[in-house]
Length: 415
View 1 (cartoon, helix red, strand yellow):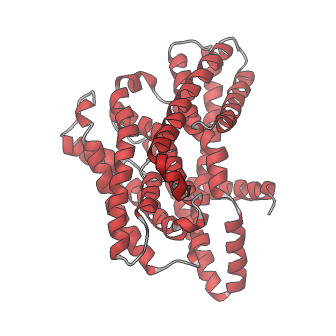
View 2 (cartoon, helix red, strand yellow; view 1 turned 90 degrees about the vertical axis):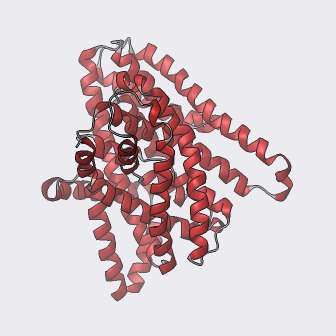
View 3 (cartoon, helix red, strand yellow; view 1 turned 180 degrees about the vertical axis):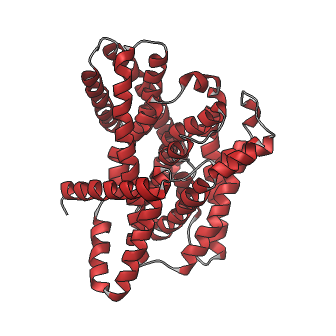
């Protein structure tokens, strides 16, 4: 299927599902579209029991589309910039230490904790998954997803400092997680001859991607803000910001540094300059509307694609995958709780008890399409089928169960 045709179908179906959610379900967009697309996928699977040949053709069409490449290579750049550009940098600057701790050390520690628990889970469910592949799973499932988190937090009523902690972390930790995932992938791809300097090479790769991405984001933020401060037309301002996001992300790929991290830093930099009054205020509002609309379109499209993943894994799904996925939900939540518990004393503002704060940060750390995209980018010989299935189960629970109960958790937190 031609890429343009795939894009057309995705836009049409996205608009349809978004309309159904807006008119009838009235859920936050990420939850509503995930729910509808999951139901549609299950209908296709049931129909496939009666028409197996047609179902196999549908599965082939879904499998032929590069979800991982589309999300990581295109969608992620826009989503991360849009989210970071609209964040409250005044509150974020006060919470910068815990946000950085959550998004860096927290993600790395969480990835290793999840990997250890997942290795044990796969053993007891009879699945043979090497620890290195479990590390890949830990890296892809550790980060919270900005699309899901921003959609839930938009009208959550959570106090601003904690809200910014969750939002800021979800934007920043994607870049860190992608860097960690690529580093572990490089180790998994290495040959025995490469193992002499493997640890050093991995550290160098991680630092190059992370530090290089952050510095590159600051660089394009500096030059971009200098140019945009001279623009008085909102259409031209929007076009230039769009060009910086697309061109900057592509250039980061050429330089082999972290594009996601660069886009987050770029968005934070422009947001800070916006709060300092560098840009003409009469053009900021229409620019924010543009990025908000683009973010909403891509967010709905992303969760539609997550629903389509059900179709691609349904014909090879095994009961052991379900048991492993359910146990991994507990492992992911437990690891998240441990890693957010440590930096809580660094939080500023008046919060409830440490355990309550850790609980709300754990429950609000939703997993989403980024984890699915990373899982789909795995090589076939890295237990891709198992890890994609387990990742999907964790993501569905995160969006539907954690997302739908988030308001009740916030009520409990405020009590």
